Length: 196
Picture 1 (cartoon, helix red, strand yellow):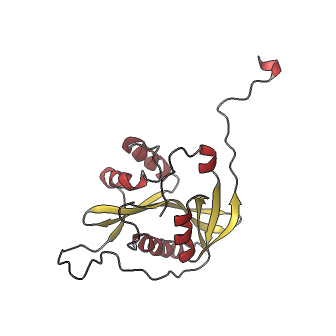
Picture 2 (tube, rainbow, N blue to C red):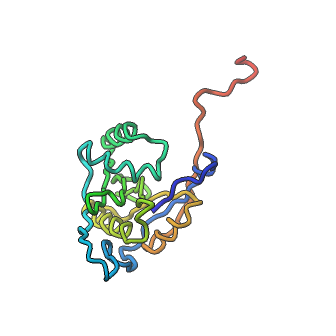
Picture 3 (spheres, helix red, strand yellow):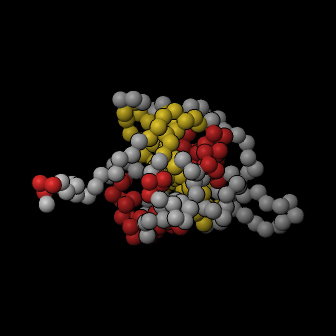
């Protein structure tokens, strides 16, 4: 449920992140996804959550993921997903009416600090489809994954300015438990007096 960086935001601000860890398995209630005005007779399919496996399925997520990761074009996004899949990355898509409404990228890994843990890399709902319960459905689906994979926690990083996303995570009983420090490594060593 994250939002794209505001125009003019510096990369320094974008990298100031807050570490969040999942501490419970419950979630707050929300209007059911797919619900419409009682007076509307329009047919609407039920949301479906599935793993994006084929190139077509992965690329169908790009329109949503690019709202969170605007630096990736379709081809770069597909290539990055394929590279990360070797490291355990998985991409889940929530579809309704044959459109991807929300997507989440995650991986299961193991750390000395936590043991096995599910780490969410990317979590976003289409900006035109927010507040309809799609994020809650994806979150609840992710809670099932660590249970079967032997994980004890679900963790994610959320940039400090994404206050709407933070409110969502708090509603899902997640808590802020640590700072996330970032050091940008220069592409080449700085030039000292003896290097000129």
